[in-house]
Image (cartoon, rainbow, N blue to C red; front, side):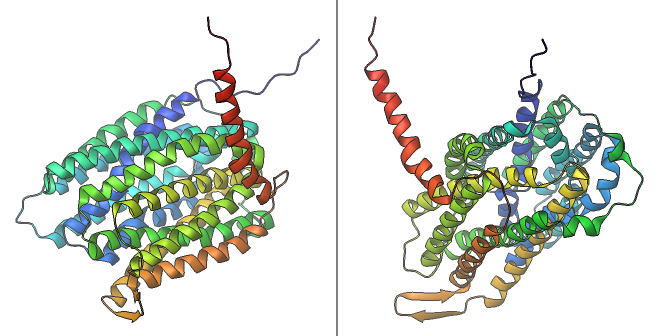
Length: 453
């Protein structure tokens, strides 16, 4: 008698988690807060910081032409080549950071932007092979679990990296501190290449290698996919714009030190990690849309609080910062896990690489253009302010209020995104706030009653 083969996580998948650890250490430094702080250190404007935030997203546009080659070459080989190329340029960034002191900030900014452009070009081309590779490798019933473990690995790495950044930048306030961090990023990039090469490869079907023209218009017109792209566009526009707002508000309005700013990132990472582990198990039970709805509600509240802080109604202190960092971490953990799972379920197997390329590029267009636009708007509004009783309208409170309105619009866009077999949002909140805590308490009391000896 032939017994059914039980689905399980593929052997060797742990290499993907180790890859994510080292990869996250690397890009947390050169694409995250440390790089933005470096540009603020050399006197860059909000618009330039917006360009730095935008570059990774804009270069993801290259996934569209690259998608035609990835399945002909093979997923692992294609991604490995791109990751190897981009890693070389990280050590160049470290060299730019420790250039002689007599080189002015404008020259440093131009050189770093040029290297970031090349780095992100290589990254953008090779990234189109990773999601199709993992989607084909991991069975559908384990994707929520995989995404949560993958994101947990990334956040543990980011937590350790930001703690290192806090230590380095609090003891080395000059360019040497950034040069050291960028060197660490290079070593981590090398480590990520080792584990990337050990992730199991998957066979590419003959139909995927077809030389027939790609029906791009049919992909864009596929209604479930189209609705998902619209929802993502609105949501990511707020995330991208508010990342520029947050850096500039902390540094320019409230004069926060570099090491203190990285400490806020540590808080985010520390809260994000347990949330990933919890929500990764829950999303396979609840479905993606209820979790995305909960994320939107939490983000509306989060950005409303920042609007009040920017307007001078609430104080800017460590209690508020810790609370806001925590609400962001919980909401963003929900979004990352549920959004990726929803994309994996909506994208059909036929033409998977091209669907994911369009999905990533649409996200990147928004994530790339919006930070630049918001940075220009911040510079344009400048120091203007209008007081209304205790409320002060200024560049930061205005833009955060716009973010709140856009997140409200995203709730309407999410409603029309299709998904089968999901909980209602009410049932999801009942599961999170009542059932799950009750099960935990029951386990604790059950252990207390267990006879000893």
